[in-house]
Amino acid sequence: MGRKDASTIKLPVDQYRKQIGKQDYKKTKPILRATKLKAEAKKTAIGIKEVGLVLAAILALLLAFYAFFYLRLSTDVDPDLERDED
Image 1 (cartoon, helix red, strand yellow):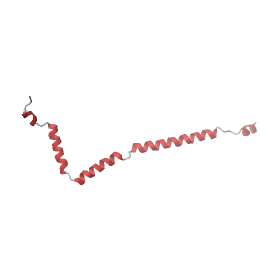
Image 2 (cartoon, rainbow, N blue to C red):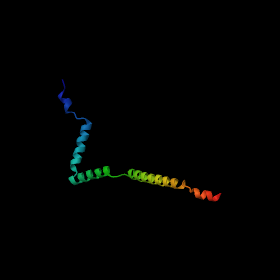
Image 3 (cartoon, rainbow, N blue to C red):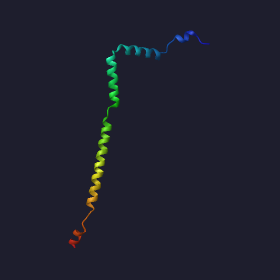
Image 4 (cartoon, rainbow, N blue to C red):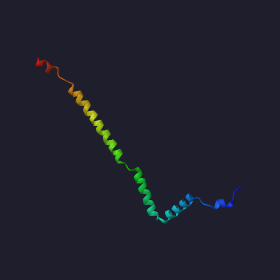
């Protein structure tokens, strides 16, 4: 059987949470709303890493395209030019 005194003792974690809750209520609604919007904007914003990866992918694609056509056109040698040299 449990004691009634044991249930009245609050854990330090619960006291801390209650204290934080009281501090949160002290803030006004516009401040809370602004903080929430700022956190959401930070979460959904495109980071520098993503922009850099997209630019690197586009650059790699352009280089591959350029290299393909460069090699394709540079290997085409006119046989008529070689015959004239002989």
